[in-house]
Length: 294
Image (tube, rainbow, N blue to C red; front, side, top):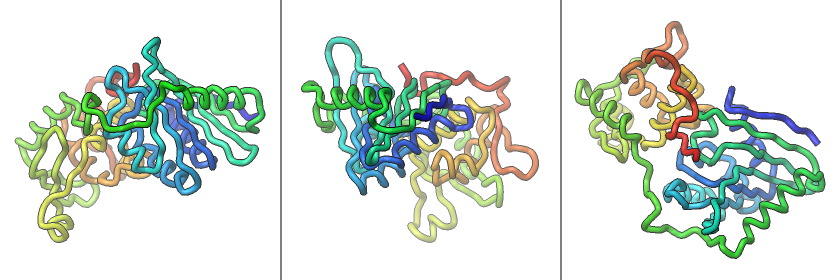
């Protein structure tokens, strides 16, 4: 069996989780908390796995940390979602498993299905081998026991579970101030204008030449995209458009990058690289509450 340590450095942990899901015909994820930012990071893999068999996701809604929008996103990606609130003690694992035939893989570590997969200081053990290998067999046995726990219930939308993701409060204040100063943000590469017609806790509406020609109005940039980009920028110290688009899968990357570049303590990267860097007196400590870990 192959065993390796993976961390959030260079996105190794995220790649291990994505690879684990991609490698399996059977996928079972047991995590305490899920945010839409985390689900979006693995959504492509969940959708591909769902074509083989529905991935299974078991979370807790204790402490209001598994957001309704995240569980809906996982369900829409083809996952079967259950909620386990034991009542005695807290359900708090971070376990990602898959198997195909006799082969199996898993990631066992500290990261919930949140932006903590790329932002926080997290570590995991990546296991690759046979499903009969003791470590993988024990992990699968434990995960199946949790999934079949009689207290685990099929997820249904609940009024007391937080709904759609909003902008982090301080980030919303900064965005509103930047828009009030000048609603037009120019992309860092081609200097194309992006006009923000509205900014609320529920998202940004951005008008471009393309969106105006196609829809006659701006298009929504959902909060998770900007929240995730902001967290990664502050934890890593810099963020390129390529990373934002390809690694973090923020498909409005040019607009998001243009907006970030106008926020306090942020400046465009020098030279030909399209991106931004944090200049606010040092990189913010990873592991902030925004990552959703508890």
